[in-house]
Length: 380
Image (cartoon, rainbow, N blue to C red; front, side, top):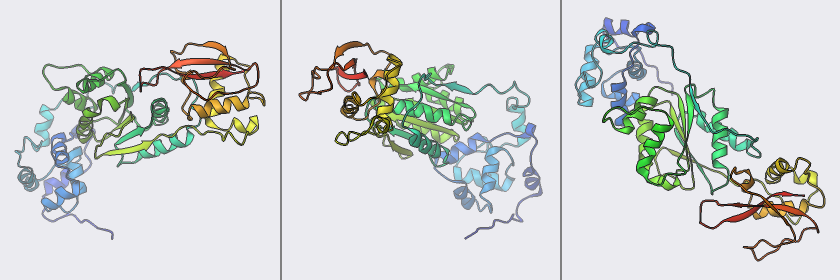
């Protein structure tokens, strides 16, 4: 059913004049009214019904500063919120202008968007569908918090960074990657975010208020990486989102955050070949796990190719890694060549490749235990 809202005859002439399109100089958003409404989880329609306002969109216009409520509606707003006019920002516009700082047109030029993402030096392989799905979710107005869920080393961070890059034009005020990997104390999460955003601390103001003030009016993406070890700090996320309507938060974690606003996005391993089929080398390279293996192998040996001879060994290596992106892409790997006739020390089952096949073993730690694991970067 289409609802048609007509202007009420109770509107005063002064309010109808106020609702005409204001000049840029006269635009003074009412953040206090908006914060009080959001704190109670009220919609514009809820407020409109409680004060008998015909058009709920008018509440949004009051909050954005495009119009100013008449004395009757100012009184009604104070009644339902239980606040004074000053506490709701319901002083007259001219008075507000005398106390407000300079508007955009009078102040310095708008600063450049913030863009803080770790550099990437290789293309993302096998995640085109996931990137597209992530971008579609981030464009939805009802999706404010999105958690990328998956095992360690599955590629959540890289996937999140790629989605942020694809959405750079959408988040006009920028994006910031915040690494929580070294953090174990939940109380250090907010200070880490403040440091990443280059927010200057002022006096005794709570840190969460500093972050709110910095992001309140921005269309911004915050990417919080490795949240699983500080998941107890998660409630601040919804507190931040409540007062920053155009901010979205993308989280990578091995565990859900258990927040009402959370949308979970499971990240699956890369596609794997079926070992029993033994496909041709050209077909084998179509699997994302194999393509990533070849990419990293060619970084070590530019002439490397998948051949009939090494294809079975490469396929089994990728299957053993369960489709996880190769630890060979980690920057802190060390390499040592050994003959591939040996078994993996921590595995009872042995691989039996063709004689003379060589591999590079890479020690790495997936963060889940103190013991090192081994995988391969190249077969030739």
